[in-house]
Length: 404
Image (cartoon, rainbow, N blue to C red):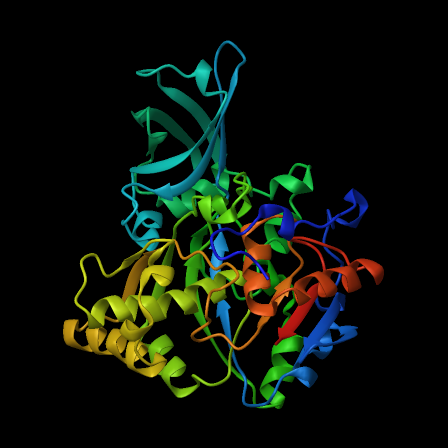
């Protein structure tokens, strides 16, 4: 048993040989391996047969965010290259969809490579050749201390989404240790990605193909799409020996009226596709709790809230989700944008999720903690089995269906 006052990072490590990290995707997305863990038993299949192992009453929830080419490079006259890795629009509560449609200029927070060579007040510029002619992109510091930059471009009628398709590069995970290729522009997106704004892919979804969706449809397995814009914080290593001291990143989530209606109709068999979908579903419950109790800032969820809310203040799941539904109806909104920093660690009591479709994650990561919260110590057995059976790991690796 874990001590109640701390969770040691050392308990969530495992040995991942470098050669087991999948640096490139398989030629066929659904040809990957599928480890199935159900009621403590493990079996090995292929991903294309996923639907055979799902209860027909299951309801899958996908994350339809789309990765943007978030890496921008500017070369100074001195030869120094400044890299802007755009993380999120500024201010943080600005809906990503709105930021993507901005024209002429945009303000983003990011990570700045070689920042000591870029002085406050200095303008960076790059000329881009597009089909419509040359586009001039400029960058200036908006807030040096907070790593916020202002981008502006001519012609100004281009949207930010159009601009970065030409100006940017797809930001692959750092552990792939390689530059992005043209092929990654397609392979590092799910086939159902539609909502631009992520800087990392919801990689559990990379295995899904039209053929796999056909098999889901034929078995009568229903599904829906919500949007969580995945941030680079998903790769942030835990450095604290007690994982509870880790500062969890926040990400923007969009829930629609259709999402809420579907969830209320399938509360007993919700299976998220990926850890980001799981974060979005579990966050929704706590947003509902905040609405029920008319708490301040109900659409921001910090990493501690779920652990600090007393049991006697935790309503039934249906009541909580209904509270969010009622809010949308009362305010005549089609969708709700929230910011979640939910931190799912062992000891967390799942509210909506009955299992997960997910890849195999980095040792000592927040994603391993999430899997450990779902499976208990059996996560170690699952990962040992995957290693013993030559599974490929991380973003471009193989998949699992975990049904505790």
